[in-house]
Image (cartoon, rainbow over all chains, first blue to last red):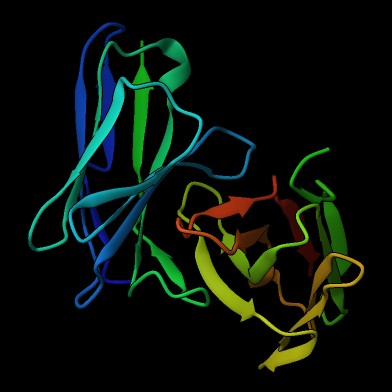
Length: 114
Length: 112
C-alpha cells in the first residue's frame, strides 16, 4: 500500500465524451504526476503538478488537462475521448521536487473508450 | 533511439537462480534511476532506487549503475515464482520537471 488512491478503478466511455479521473496523494506529498500506460508499454508522462501549479508536461494534446487542489489531490481531465485513449492511467505521488525523490503509484484507473 | 531501453523478454529463470535485468539510457544528464515491479493488471511498485555509480543491495535485490556506460541493471538472487512480473526501468533527468521516463519493461517468469 502506497497511500496513493485513485478513483474510479475502471471506467468505460464512448468516443467523444469527457472523463475526469481523481487521485489522492500520499500524506505529506505535494507533487503529483500523471502517466498513461498502454498495453505492453511503459508509462508515458502526461504532466506534473507541484503545489497546485503545472510543473511540466509530456507530449500530450491540450485535451488532456489537470488540476491540483490545496490538499494536493489531483484530477486528470480528458476531453473528446478517442479510441487510442484507452489505457491504464496512473497517478504518482512524490514528497517534493528533489532530484532523488521517489515516486509512488496509485492502483490506476483502467479507461476503456468504445 | 529510445530514451530508455530494456530487453522485452520474456526472460525465464528457474526457481533459486539469479535473474539479471538490464537497462540502457541515452541522456547523459540523467540523475536518478529506479526499478519498478508490475504484476499483470496492477500498477508499478517501486523496488529499488539508485543514484550513484556502483552497487546497491536490498534483500535479494541488487541494483547496479554505471553512468559512464549509461547502464543500470537489477539482479534478483534466489528468484521465486512470486517474482514473476514485468520489471520497469525508470530514469529521471535533472531539470525543472521531475518526470520519470520508463522503458517498455522486461517480463520475467520464474519457473518452479
